[in-house]
Length: 436
Image (cartoon, rainbow, N blue to C red):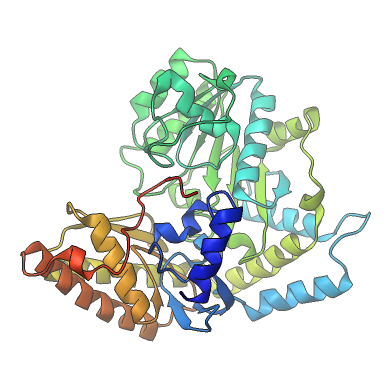
């Protein structure tokens, strides 16, 4: 067994679930054969513990590195901060400079609070919005983290309400049952469903992703904004994933819609931990009426990395670059699938695209794709998160190899080959599963 797989086997005996993030579990990609750990990374390349060089054509740190791994300018800025000191009894000035830049980006906003993870930022925004509105009720659409307030949705009527927002089959164990009925989910583009929730419950907050798998229809976002204004509801846009991928800031800019609050994360620090909650003064001032405080939200690396990352993004218009690269890959998927008559559905914005094979054996085919591309030197699955370092030669080589694999899949569908005989290990997981 290679070093990565051997270390992961040890990890599962000591760490519940094997690691800290579901999306990075090896079982989500290639059970028993995924490299699992990296020794170093640079650009869009990753080196394993066995020092194998791989091109990352998958999720790029779960979308954290739009400028590529180890961006020289960002890393230099962080290195300088490390030598000057990351923590002290006094506050870091960079948090003020970063707040100023985020307010400049979001002209409707007037105040900012910082955290280090998307889940924290989502929880902070909910606390502030509830304090500002004076109401506990929240209507949600999309994925918004792991905290109790969000997972409590699955206590409602004993239903699997988060199956279309997070993942199916998730039991809200450890989440107080007393939170039942405090958060209500609605489907994207289903304004009538949202309107019914608002009319029949004491809703003070609407939190949603502006775009995830597909865009708004029938003036949906405008209707949501109008409803929130009419009912005096705080409207929050979760831009932790979509932010800075199609505009310099939130994707809501494309639709000329302004929220009352918005969260940014993922791309903002190019691999360094930093998230932000921005909002209007009338809403954000409510943070002083409650208690929101954490020691490591005051460290200096995150804000410093974000300042340099935003500078590079603004200068190079990186959102245009990654969108172009994402479209090239997505168009390649479509072309290859049509060539071999393999039905697929592409989802999400171009810079964080994914596809699903619409066939009975889709998980087996997904496993085969990951398995065979790994043999060719690619970290890949059915996702592609673009970064500025994804050179055309890498994309072309990846698509050429994928073409060969789809040819094999077509033979499996014709009965000429048995998919089970082609797999070197177990089939990948589709969602949450117990490992230990």
